[in-house]
Length: 309
Image (cartoon, rainbow, N blue to C red; front, side):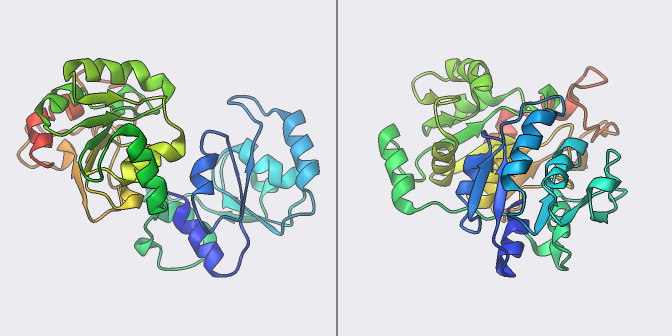
């Protein structure tokens, strides 16, 4: 979702270095507008002052502008410690003194692509769409290694890092209905979840969760005939490659994080006038259903999703 911002900056002549955690750094290396990637040696939790100060000394004097995309205090620390003259970001977490150019956070949750692109200071944000591309030979090499043909398989991404309230529970039932090979993608933490799905449709379902690099997962998505996913990072990857996809929303909202893809079909019971009683609780943006019924995803049938493939 940050790719359109980087494309805007590149188009106006800025040379871009992205600082990212190791697990997401490969995504930026796949973007041609990015000149370099610095992998952050940081962990979740704590300011890790010593590590940030050490990295700040290494990069000091090397940059004119820092665009701080996360809204956290610690994400704004590194550009401040590195004395980068112009530091652009949204107000949040008492970081007024750390930023030199501050945008107010919108009252309502806007689409995240436009939220990030606004840091460029340019108009026309409503037209921004993420774009990814891999060389055809790179995609073909990955498919050959897996014994797959372009367009001849379906990718499922049943995980969602945020929590259970974003995970549709009927992927296994859907896999049983699909005649094509099914490839399950996700992180190592989602391997057991994917294995449980694979066991429901043995023979033609392949669990690759935790067994691919991020770029290999990108290639498998780029070559797929269709992608079915929750509202997750891999959903946005599929959208950026422009492949046919079905995106399932529960506790979150496609008004906030939509798959920006003309070939995407969104399933969200909140917007279904025939679904009764209406989902007045959605979107709650909670990690787990606060009401305990999980209707927003439980009531989306495998049959309904299969009809969209």
